Image (cartoon, rainbow, N blue to C red; front, side, top):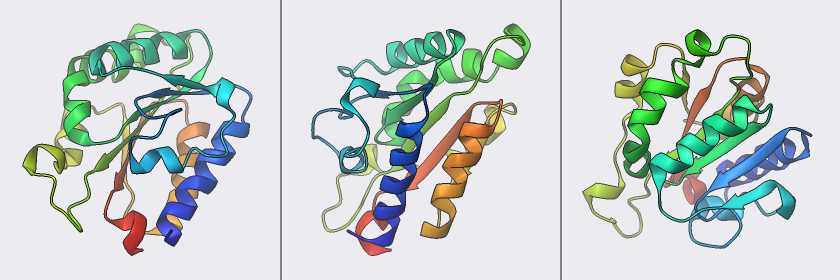
Length: 176
């Protein structure tokens, strides 16, 4: 495991220690993606494993936030998060206007799919960071280039009143 993956594990462990966090998504409790391994120290009672229904997942994420939880909603790749674009653009990004007195802390964790050692094909390696920055002016959208950025970026996302999308690089789990 590289330092990039170690820093992700450190950040997820810290988030898991916060009393109001909940992790939601695919492969959060059961193995299935590289992100699963970064959740190893998150208590099981803080994980909600979901089937593949991305838009519903984001709707549940918004609901959890409105009840006071800080959801970490995990989409292993940008290409999967695209299926929840309606919820992100029309609800998550607009929470500051639609529900200004409610909690709107949401951390959306996604990634640019790994291309090495085997390229998974183009439907798994998209990077839509810039498009979401343009579509969602009320979201903090952060791309994690270096291991040193990881912990502080997730900590800032947790401490922010506004929702965040944190973008990881799948290739960097083993390369950096």
